Amino acid sequence: MKKLSVFLIFLLIFVLSALFVFNLWFGKKNLEEAKIALLAGDFKKAQSQAVSSLHSFQRTKIFLSVLPFSGNFSQIRELTEIGEGLGKIALHLANTGELIERIFGVVLGKEVGDLEEIAKEAKMEIDLVWRDFSLIESALKKRPIIELPDMRKKIEIGREFFSIIPEVVGVSQKKSYLFLFQNNMELRATGGFIGSYGLAIFENGKLLDFQVEDVYTADGQLKGHVEPPAPIRKYLGEAGWYLRDSNFDPDFPKTTERVKWFFQKETGRVVDGVIGVNLFVVQKILRAIGSVKLPDYQEVITADNLFERGEYYSEVGSFPGSTQKKDFLGALASEIFQRLNQTDNWLEIGEALFDSLEEKQILISLDDEKAAKVINHYHWDGEIMPNTKYQIPNTKYIPDYLMVVESNFGVNKSNYFIDRKLNHKIEIKEGIEEELVIHYQNNSPIHVWPGGDYKNYLRIYVPLKSQLLEVKIDEKPFDLREVDVFPASEKSVFGFLVKVPVGEEREVKVRYRIPFKFEDFTAYALFFQKQSGTGGDPLSVLVDYPSSLKIVKIAPDALTGQYVLLYNTELSKDRLFLFEYIQ
Image 1 (spheres, rainbow, N blue to C red):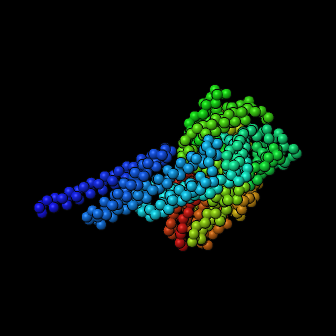
Image 2 (spheres, rainbow, N blue to C red):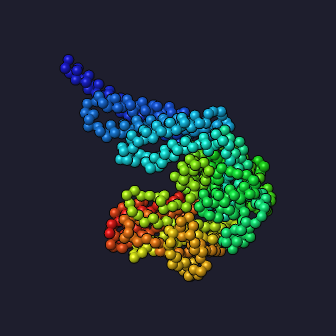
């Protein structure tokens, strides 16, 4: 009898252990299936798998609590808690995904619904994601299961997005937005030459109309003369200023005011915001939705041939006042819009748009105060970053800044053929001297359009009151009297023309001294702002510091040597380089 009792006890322990292991394995498997379904945009399946995973982890906790010696399984207990938390997060994300689909359906006119109520429901679901994420975040920090900063940021954005979307799409009053289609193959300050524009009109939470026009159609209606900025007159050869060249200021909110002024003068229309979009954005959307067939052109436009076919139909043989550009872009926009009406792949489209915002390929400036505040918080409005925006708590830091701004004034598409890489050196001695080196290579095969010489009006934005010391092109001194030096957006700006002939290379060096002394601070921060319309150009930042400094913190990771730091990265988005020191 005693042996039977011992056998039954062992059998019970074995069964409980098997059930524990089975539910732990099943919970993990279903959680992975839920993740795959979420990424695929199959929110129904994600919901089902998340619920199954959640139940499995909850049963695992019950079995773990009754097993003998379970007090020794602290790591397994912690993993079970994480699994349960991730199951809840997956379920709320799946619910959020369904609600996002409904929001797009209402806005695009595919379904009927109360947009404000749907947005409130989505906000509640994403708040639950935030709650459950916060409960397991400390445990997740010990285990690299997901990218925590990226996850936290996306949750924060979701919470704020659902609070502003009803007003943005005109639930309470009609809204109209001007889309600037900026061709970054002819790079300009905020992303590219404005060849076309689109006007989107929203009312009662629905998109009523979206039309594309050639910019020359609007420019031909401007009455009177507007004097252009001196570089546009001098290097581009334009005697007047029009909408097509209105994005001269790299500070997009300031450019937006100028754009809206020109648009109102030329068309009589007043808009509630301006969105700058370049071809990289269209390319990302095409990768998300697939190729688009244009029956009138007997062409299939893909992410791979977009630039080449777009240039062919938009530019070859076109002239001011022609409708060729409008017709092609209008047909492409119409087909993309139709595809968006049919697609369920909103997750991938959302990722494409999010990446474009982070990479500064989309810039947004809206009149709505609440929406503008949210957009500015995430640096999506293309504002020239003020020193106060990158605060570092409890740290007295040197607020260094750098932005490279190029404007192609060669009336060609040579940026398609331009490669560049940037090297920046910071030398800390009695003062702080810096040297920016930009290496250009023009791979244009021939001199004729769309390629050709790269005629680049280059502007370097640095901290206010910085002193320009030297400019060299291919190691030859550049006459500083030919450099425009002026303040703008609370920065000092150095501007001059750089020409890179077909098939040749140029190296531009700019040396300057910033108005700070390292002994007055305990940290150094360089905010390197990216220009819209450029890709992920290679970037290295070298810091040469004296032996009297002891570096105590570095972010991001850098190579270290004797009194040197080297950051190697790419300028695919804004970058912040930071190190703290003691003397």
